[in-house]
Image 1 (cartoon, rainbow over the protein chains, first blue to last red):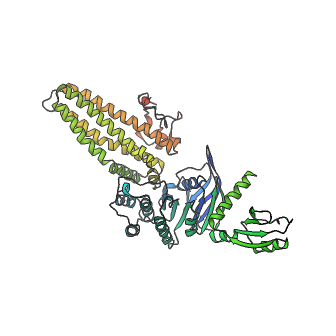
Image 2 (tube, each protein chain N blue to C red):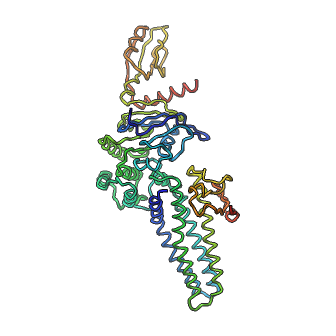
Image 3 (cartoon, rainbow over the protein chains, first blue to last red):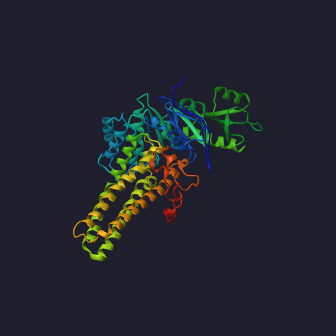
Length: 298
Length: 205
């Protein structure tokens, strides 16, 4: 049986103009999940349910073995949470925040906190109101990391950061991967960031999980086939095709379950396979979302 | 109830509001000075300013600790800590009350001292000052209740509201362990910005 840090089973939450529907999600301990969705897809709502900040209407949520939201206090002792819309107290210094968090979390690691201060180029006596957005994110990340959480939940932490700050934040996240017991849920609509650090990928759109898998398998099974069809030939039917673009004679097929047998099947049907292109995570995400929306419309 | 966390949150609010509280003390001392030296006009002006200082501090405290926490998006930071909404709400009620008591007690004691010590010209005003002090405290408590109703709606803890959706059920909110659970004061309507006139239309339940 898998050791799961996060387990959502049939979770739903309805708002007047948005619904999270039947969310099933498993995050194994020690893994880093990239949680990708467009703005308004339901990433933050899912994360708030995970944190016990919002109560689900249906379904069960377990985080680090604790049922949420009933056991949220015990669960949150082992969670580090950083959100793009989370702010620290403007009139207080970074040192005050560090002391405040240290007084709450028994596993607070002061020497690690000090090393992060140096690495992020933050001054403890700086007041939060004088920090740039990038520095505020780094300060929040420092407060989350130095408490040595078993689960790190990052809700779009790189949104609005300049390239240098983004690089530093991602670099630090890569460094914490050395701790195999650390589990990370990283939500973003920036697929490049997610691709860099994640080993699991989950796509969410319009309140539904549309795909979830190991990153390598994900990148491996998505391909784009560029075909040339002879005059008056029809496009061969292949299973696993999620999108068809291009012209009648030069179609481009996007598949989410590529196998080498697909190429020979195309040849057998008279088509010439010009190229089999691998896809970036961004292309996969866009194709997944568009394919999912087309299926919903049909 | 995790009292240790409640205590930490109260200390946090005390730290963040310390300049407001400490600033109110010299302001109150100035109003007491005006009462002491200003004759009849100074007395009435001083009393008016004193009441204004107490109400302003109480109002500002509520805004700074509850409304601003939402407006400035620090609520997500606090709620991500190992606390429940119940503990957070308890910390807000107790914290606001305790912090407000510091300037209130200081200024009320200052007023009584001024009236009782020579030249004791205003002894007949002691009941008046006592009523004014109690009434300002009552008003500030009512304001807390009103802000709390807004806070609960915002924090998705609306199950702690009364059935009328306008007032807080403290018994539900604090699991039946509160002195306040049998008392209801203001008819505050959560989410409405135009309900200050309801503050004294409350009823005991």
